[in-house]
Image (cartoon, rainbow, N blue to C red):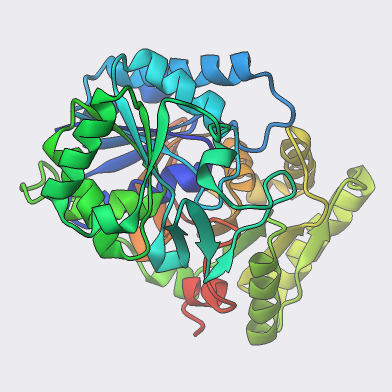
Length: 411
């Protein structure tokens, strides 16, 4: 069985496949949609493709839909038995245009939509997202209502399914969905407050894989993976804990979420290594000074280097800044050499992670598991037969204040 997933950013593409590794399946994140980068797709049980759409500003719906359709066609070449559309658990991104694009390629599918991720405090009740019990509120969507985020508040083809129906059991849920589909509904927005609620939705999807397109966060794929019991075809690579507990590690934080800020503060408190900040003002002179700070810390024995992007870079600006910084490092620290200058990387923020992977000439990311829900362990496959680079990826809003220090075995 091959599982195909479309995601809109790197951390999401990684955390949505991680649950499948718990049952021994192999999982890969495609960093782009190019054929060369996906040439070994047949070697994986689960493939998640990153469309890179999340942090792109003011894109036209036609372009968003076209990119998502291209990703879906890439997956269709390998005939997945199960399709999944990854969305953000707090409803960021181009939700409607991406879903429309994927459904145009999967003719006749019914979208079963639930962004809940209870293990990370994201729940859906009466069609509204709550984060740790507080109703989600965004500038363009103060209600936190899922249908509104998908621009379907008045859509005839959309309907909501509440907790009462879901908790009546899988058979009652299937019957309710059948009635809605017969009435012309194509988008079913579902509540879920507990992992058990998601388990019921997963049972429906797994029982009718050719009918539904499951749409949700990693909470949904955790439930789907729990419904699978067949033996894996290949073993998942071992993870070397010593890399992050004793090696030279770059912690790169691009997310501006409050959680990320608190995590950097806690990491600084524990290690005594203050972060290096960089932003739009970066230039050749500043790059050289930052590079010298790296070297000075290395000479004094520091093993954790924290780099924080302070201004919320968009589009290609972050890639340019990272390239400027890394180009100022001495040759033995070259990001493009056969060996990486660091033993491992911890990255917060999908856009940041993507551009770090590009700076490292990464082709694809093999996901090997999770250290905790939403914090993903992976091995970056690089060009020119370089060794794989171990990485830990985390979405900005995930984890408590000690999440980064636990990644480094400091707490």
